[in-house]
Image (cartoon, rainbow, N blue to C red; front, side):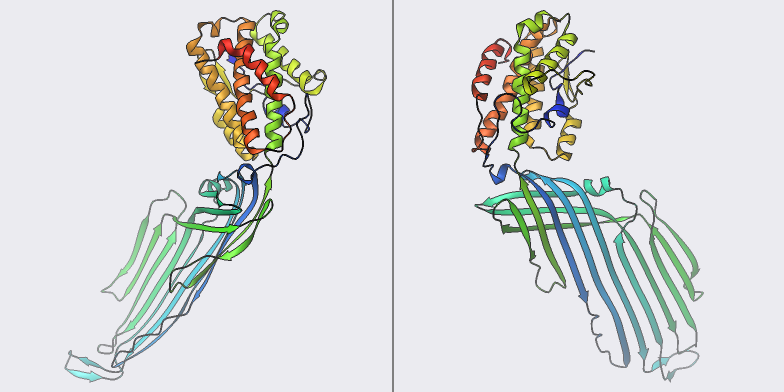
Length: 437
């Protein structure tokens, strides 16, 4: 299956180009809008709480002593990058420790016993109970799983104001122990009961084990549970200045809440304009290479033609031919002879991971989709002639470049585009024959 290389130069060359390289140095104070910038940094959410034990309610004829604590310490640090909208999550670090401990002692002053005879006994029944549970993040979760369970959105809500919202879900490890001892003042018997709960590995089935019985006065119950999950959501808004967002604030909590939640953020903007300019330069160079009729006439087939066009594009960009032994360009995405597109999903993930502007992927996807439409509309799409294929590539690269140029004009008003507009208009005229309706 011959894959038509819609993006054959790919990332290896475009990102290697220095600013202003190739024809018409595209450099200068680009004045990128904050909404179009790539923001990189961290968002941190902290939750702290310490709830004192409640005071026991007095009961007539009984002495109740209660003690315990409930504490929470949670921190999540999310490293992100991207444009306004859904940011790419680069890494997640989450720590959670929630502990609850309760001790109860109940003593009846006296009790009326009915057997073997009706009689009051002092002191009466006596019971003691201890209950505790602990929640933490389950160990062993992969970084990829933690990232997958995280989302962060950046929105601009007005002049120099932004809002960040998101959430993180992770598996949790739950441990609990309940122990109670009771003494019956009437018959002098003692009873003991325990309930223990533990968390098993992911995917494990729950099971229980029961020792003893209530009638025997001794009972131990053990439960193994599948991992639970904990979701921490957050949202906050603030002002920013320049090309950075940095600050902290307490997040609002409902009345009576015992947990304090704070947000910290530190993000810096990087102009997307240089990357988009370099991609535009590449598109123009490839379009001009494929527009060269002599280059097509010298090629025996489309494979040889693609290689020759790649070398010519390199020469247009760098002013010299590629060095000897230069490795072939990696095919990042392509369209086959049946108009089927491949490689876009992997390419999207790669560009997101590298924090590249969204418009770059959008233009590449549009380029390949145009080839799909060409296959449907023009029977000669598969005629195997280098010149036919070259004109179809000119059309696709011109459309791709038009998207990038218009984006630059809107989002990078300080950018000097040189003669890019004139070069593009020439390519559009050459490729008009194979521009789908």
